[in-house]
Structure formats: C-alpha cells, structure tokens
Length: 71
Image 1 (cartoon, one colour):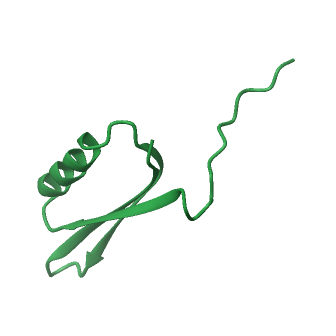
Image 2 (spheres, rainbow, N blue to C red):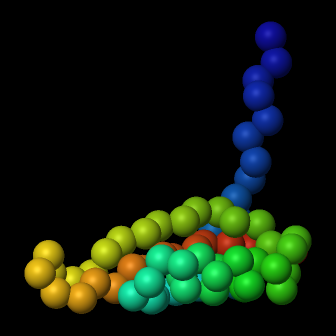
C-alpha cells in the first residue's frame, strides 16, 4: 500500500518568510492580502494565522500573518 505524498516544507530561514497585515476593516484587510498575492502568483503559502487586537468596547485591529515561500 503506497503512502500519500507529504510535501516537504523548508524551514530554512533563507527560504521561509512571513508577511504581516494589520487593518481595522476586514474589507481593507482582504483587499491588501489579495493585492499582495496577485503580485506573486507562484508564491507558496505555508501557513496563515489570524488574531484580533483590542478590547471588546474599543477599536479593534485585525492581524494576519502569512508564512510563505517565494516561487
């Protein structure tokens, strides 16, 4: 029985990179990420993390980190 192919993801700091996006508005955040992705369509996304910074009663910042390898 053959094993499924598991892609090798480099953890070499010269290869793996991270890009942070931070916005108040989700539509603006989405537009920024899509524009960044469109500039390098061969970019390989390794991991995406998201969080919210702020307090329940105050303004919030949406933060997304995209870990990637330029292709």
